Length: 548
Image 1 (cartoon, rainbow, N blue to C red):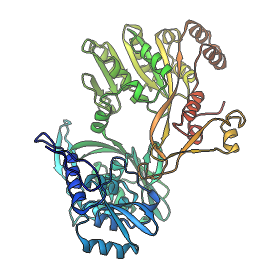
Image 2: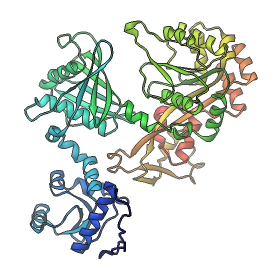
Image 3: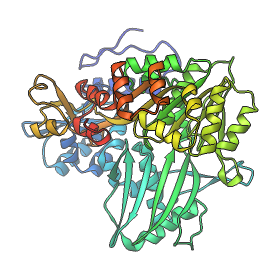
Image 4: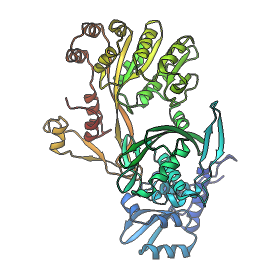
């Protein structure tokens, strides 16, 4: 078919197949409208919104007339609309905005996506909550899932709407946790996004506190009447065709009960990490090469350490994904199973039923595994079984809480593990942290103050020729200047010399010095490298690493 040429000069070629995507169909409609009205067609894939301009226009107006602002020039507001066919609506819009408007055309789904992600969307969540459709997934005693529809209807309680809209918004904003904090006169709801807490909405009057907590307790099947002791529970929601797990922790405080809801979107994560490999986590090439060498050893222990929420489990999953093959039996024991890996036997810890890490690990060894992943070493028994497993021909992946690679040695000694066996079993120790990435959409060069440089352990004269960056805040990152996280790390390669120093119980400083001489890069150095690459900021690395 011949190409059609609209008035803006954009060529459109008729699809050659009978099956066309929504994206293609919308493009066709937009081109036809552009030709019909003689308007410019905007490439929405390259469209960048002015966040300040977006905030200056009432959100309900943009939603009602289905447009987003592009720019403001010479007293005229340039907007991108879906369909400008209704002249009366355009006149209304000019009256409402109090200025003349210039109209361009854009793709419907792209405009709707921008509106959905804008800060204003959050302000109307309560009003829009009738449209949310969440299915509560309950479990019977056998663990079988029983689906029941929990419809949020027009006559639903305002509290149910509030809680459900809060959960909905948290999922949309990629939050990992929802914090509900009770204060003297108000209730504050916060989201943890990329490891940092942000206030989700304006504080709520404290008189609604008990009703909110009760709603959460009902969802998690907890005791509503019990307010004096901590309670832990869980529930599932069906959202946009996938099951999402929620872990609930209720804690009594001075002003009443506080709640934290952990969001475990396993199905989404499993899709995201289907191609999970070490190189997508942000490690430098040297670390990746070393890790790939150690995870392909026939036996031994690969140990990952770091505080809670530092991405240890994700790293282990990446290791398992890289070495997975049909020739090997891989079994994991985790608390909880965060991502589902195809071809891997995954066992969830259930302490109420007596399935602990130690007991599960013993059972795994009778299951003829080649590779074993232990979610976390918490006690002496688990540590000893893991070391014995590594010595008897299994490759063991595990994590332990410690500040750095050298502190790990002390943790295992405190768990009464035989030092010789532990050192013999250990292939490597990886310590890691997560730092937030500067948002690519609003990244800009900046000059850090002399005070900040000195605080970060840098000589202003030496780094004067280096470039530093920060995010200015945009719609993509919700004004934070950060989007996503990356890993910084240090890896201890247990050479013969290092093993001898450990067996001789030499001081940690001596072991560190020997490791540095062998070419080890420490956490702080890895963090500074990310800053110089323009990936993160000095303030961000100062939060997770010490200046040495």
